[in-house]
Image 1 (tube, each protein chain N blue to C red):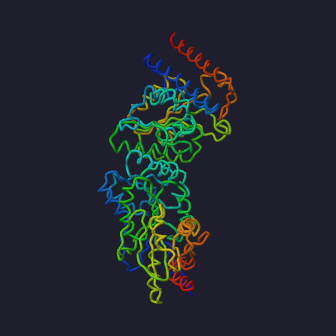
Image 2: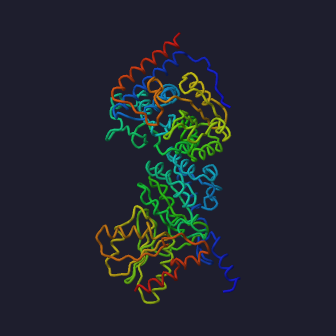
Image 3: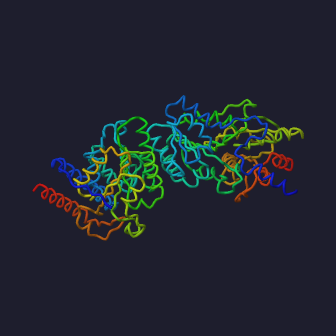
Length: 294
Length: 330
């Protein structure tokens, strides 16, 4: 059922560079969440490794020209993951670190839910779930019309698979052979009312996408080597089907006491925990770096 | 009435796709031809449909320019999503389906993806108001009411083939999103008999008269023009102000016609809730004008299924019913 690719030999420096980026994306996410004293911090921490692979390695982007014709389009369908995206864009030098302090404030370019009309580098207005994949289709069609070899990446969530429009869009992408479209599904098994698999199970997700005519892979969303290998292979494949990578992630990843906390869609963090969270993040990052350095 | 007559009546209207009456001057599939022309002028124009190209006249475009047409199947949310993405890439999509599906089923996509982003997506949607005998599943008696509160969205309710032909290039050229209530098939050509050109955002006085003022849009403009001719025979002077753009609404043109001691009626192919009557009423109230407005339109009820001529009479929107309503009011 699940096709998990074997890790191939990738340049260790490349992997380490992505891990460093993931670490900073997590730190930037914590900084923003602390400004508001709350936020979708669990999701931001779970998706940081995926965003690091994309923003530090895979996406062709120019922070000085966010609307460059010659860019890959990364679309966040799950608008509530905004702080993770702002963190990734900050890591990619779209914004100075100081601007993270404006997160979700009045007149900020970083609203709580990501919108294309507010923020350079934010391609679509997510938030109303089930919209992203359909828009990605149109962009993929447009890129093909132009003869562009750039890709569209669309990040959606496991909960979002409950929206029928996601599957309408999946069918259209396959029918039109949008092989320049890579969807990524964050499978953190968490949605507003509880575990996704207990709300409306969409498993086996890989099989469903394959049945819809997609080239589907699934891997550990925190294994940077596996993520990179899969995303490279999906991009480079000559297969005419649209591509999807389902990533299994852990809410609150990188901060042990948040990983262990009762899993909630909107995770609560007390005032005195923020400093500790930064520390724990640094600890887990160092441990991971040492382990792989051996 | 014997049985064969009633069967004949049913056949005359329930399934007909054409609005033009036998012998009437008409244009076949004006949208399709206008879009081909617009696409020849403008490289950015593309067409999409959700399994209704043939029933929205987009098949003309599809067959003339297959490489610029996208079929997404019976999936209206995917239709608007694809149109959004194409517009984001700089294309000018014209997406067609029925009004009921674009507005009721895919409204969230229309509002958030297209209107909020202020993209040049043009929705051309058939079966506005009472133009089908299928009843509430197909008849969009509420589309204008649904869409009026969508910021950035331009709403166009054309009267005839002339309006449609002239509107298409203007919709393509305007930057923001538009929604046009499409008349399809053999569509009457009426407005070229008047000194008229379609201008997006503008109302036009088609005829003047001292006793009655109709403010109308969509196919009701043709009917009030017919009614005006009848009423003229009775000695009444009848003015007709055609307001094909319902949003943004040409308030100035309407206000300029008020306060002249005439009987003022709105005529719309839409529920009297949330459509032209409400638009004119808020214009009048907002400017403190003391004027009684009499609405002609579809009642606040789910429409019966049946033959269009029967239903037009039943709901008071046929030429005869309009004439009678005015006679009683004067």
